[in-house]
Length: 403
Image (tube, rainbow, N blue to C red; front, side, top):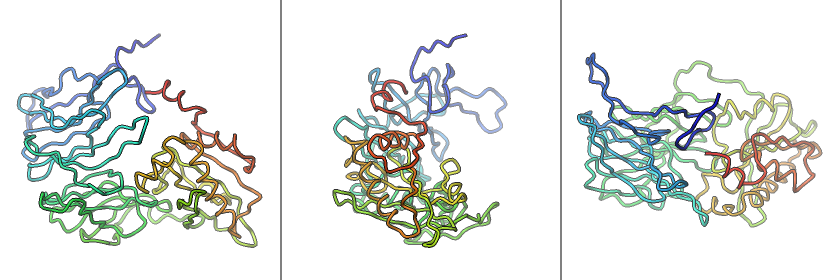
């Protein structure tokens, strides 16, 4: 048998998309009839896109993918009338994606993440923009001067502010930014004051709390409550499976790269590690590469190695998120060499510890980490073992063989 693909993309991440087209339907409460198709013949416009419904239920706002050319794909922001299915464009710009839309509780605004496309010259930047739901005002950049990439968004119940998360120095805190036009640009407040990585933000209806899931490298996701005020510690809520007993503990180290840039890492130490019994070290380079070791993972879990007596070094080299746009740009044209020198610097710092056995070192990585595993295997003999998973040898092969 064979499959004939008549449009792109044909695949996303780990599954084929097939001929079916993702669509949006509307069905009134109590209506026993067939749901109404609001997006007939969308093609691939709604693949991997998210939508939001206005408070009055009259308008759906969604990201809408479009091809400007066979190699140029971008996401617009569109509003769809629930009554008649008519569609109008709210935000659109060449070389830019508008995604993760969220309508305000008062029905006036739509907030979304605006991402500039990477170009041959520089990596794209990300911010949060605000536009009127009727399209007659905006867009307005809410995070001008905020040198971090925003992730998840949530509206305050009175529509006066947005909560959002962003990677920062091996963490992913919760922030708040007011939306009033009279507010000074860049008036961002960090409301979480710990080492956690937060997701699934859910402000309480009275505006007093922000509920969320919190994880870290040494703690799986657990529900917590934050006061909406600045600099709060989370209150952990009842959760099955918590707390989890770990076979060691987590610490943090920093080293200066050869160009003087500080490179920070998490270091997982097994219970057995000591001066008398130093632990072998595994350097683990994360995938992405524009990501960070800052949260729990059931898939990339260093505690399995710690349970077998290994120390695990989790560095954030150049191209990692949470250290500003310049930190990403440092290696934008040196995807192998610059991060390689960064991880070698922090590996040297880890091996200088008396509880680490410098004669027994290994390296591993998946995806971009697999690319770095291959690079490291070709540039040094210092590691006694290297594990390359789902990596590649040259970047142009990846460009030509993936959607």
